[in-house]
Image (cartoon, rainbow, N blue to C red):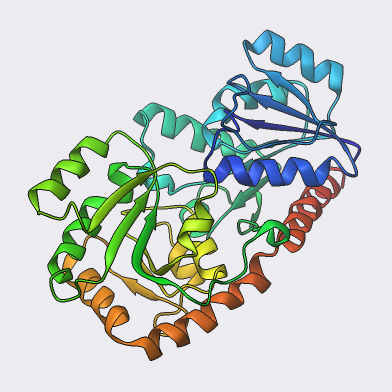
Length: 350
């Protein structure tokens, strides 16, 4: 294996985009790497090594010509729906390829035909990477003869903040202001217990189409001085690390980076037990965090109250949550990606 091509729509801030930047920056130390994106580079995106060539995909003809010119030994598609446009060309050129499913396949937000097509094309992949075992089980009947592997999201601890031992009385959430993240539920749950614990506030980091809706909800609840939409910030972990409790309220997720990072910071965390099983892949309730049913406001508010009122439980969860660092260390995870590519090619050449 000498040359690798990687495909993703963009490198703008997001979970799959960050993982992709880690992967290409790791692989370019040993191999020649080309990155294909649908969008041009912007200021608000993850950095990549200057050794990595980058092209913007404008047409299938241009894609074909670039692949013929570069002659990759293997391709990695980091956004599964891109397979609709890529797989026919890759098969025609007989280039081995890996597809990575980054979200819950049952909650695809696009058109039904797009969901059908991209999942159909996955059966032609030489390898498929998933983030959770629940997704593996979903795809098993469809990908009986495909080499599949679960690889978790990496965290780069070389640039990771140290655990803050003196935290403020704040509950924090990080995520796009989008129906999937269900911050509406979190705001309502916090408002139920706020009067009992007046020293606590809720901070929500992220931007999205629901900003005005959520701000109206906060206003209507009379929580303007308790709940704050903080917007997007480049160094969000600095602010998260200053908070006492992390809460993920999503209806569905892949393997949410914000949750993983909060645990690695040694934070007591509460998460919905949302499909496709990312949170339960990492959390054992009562040991290193707390799982609550999706959309269950009573369980969410009562467990926030439990952590606010019980310092011993917070401390125990914190100590165990931080152990996730041993699982998600970027060196280990990125080596798994490299090994998977090598194994895919070995199987292909048998």
